Structure formats: structure tokens, C-alpha cells
Length: 190
Image 1: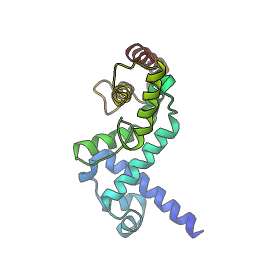
Image 2: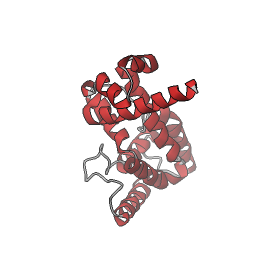
Image 3: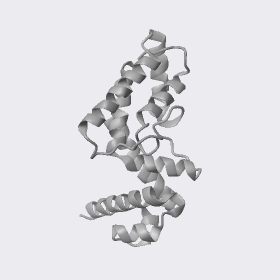
Image 4: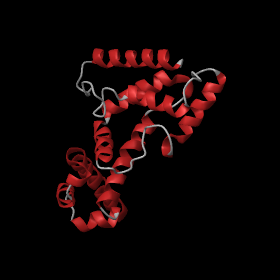
């Protein structure tokens, strides 16, 4: 029972922190506000996460892991991967607000982008797909992943266009997915 209470407390803290970090950024988030929203005292935040930055990283990782788990990656289907990332961005807009805040505030958040960390194996898989001719070999594999990710997130809080939301008409989501599949396929030979 004690373990279940601890896990419930952790979930409440992560939910309250998600809302506060997404709305106010890392610097603007307040530990006392998060603790109050979660129905705990501030000391529990420090006990669970060490400090506010540790809490931010836990929140970010929770959402990033959920997106990665919900978005299968196969280099032979980069158009499908882009459409899956689009759906993940619609389902979890808070993650993309968190990434934006982290970048604005200079806090590292290895995420969906190309390069090191979680994306390294994807870059290697793209390089192999380039060797087999499934993906254009004219671009660096890290750039391919970055372009696919950027295209997929064009309608997210991280993009420059209209932000897609879960309440948008299905025809709008389908139109955007079609645009992504067509653009990724045409641009990257995927």
C-alpha cells in the first residue's frame, strides 16, 4: 500500500509539473505551486526528484518516452513515421511546449531530433536504408532525421504554422498526414 501511495504521489507531481512547466517554462515554474497542485509538500518534490531541474527532466522524459513508444520508427517508412510524429504532437502538445521552453532557457533535452542520445540508433538505421537505396543517399542521415522530424512537427507548438489540436476536424488531420507522407516521400526518396 505504501508503494502504491508513493507511485500515486509521483504521478500527481508529474501531472502538476507538466502543467506548470508547459505554461511557465523552467524558470517560471514554481515548486510551491506544483506541490500545491499535486496536494503534497515541497519536500516531497526534492525527495523524489532532487531539485526543480530534476523534476523538469522527469516530466520531459515521461512525455518523450510516451511519444517514442507511440511512434514506431522504421527507416523504410519515413513517411509513416512522420505521420506518427504528427499524431503524437497532436496527442501530447505539452511535450513540444516543454522542448520549446528547454531550448529557450538553454536546458538540454535530448529528444525527438537527430543526433546523439535517443536518436543515435535512428540515424544509424537511416544510414543503412541509404546504403540499400530505400532513402536518398544525398543527405547526411542525421539531416534526414532532422528534416523528417521538422516536417512532422510543422503543426505542433514547436512549428511556425497553425497549431493542430485534438479538436480539429478529422479531414484536417488526414490532409496534414497526406501532406507529410507526400513531402517526406518526395523529398527523401523514402
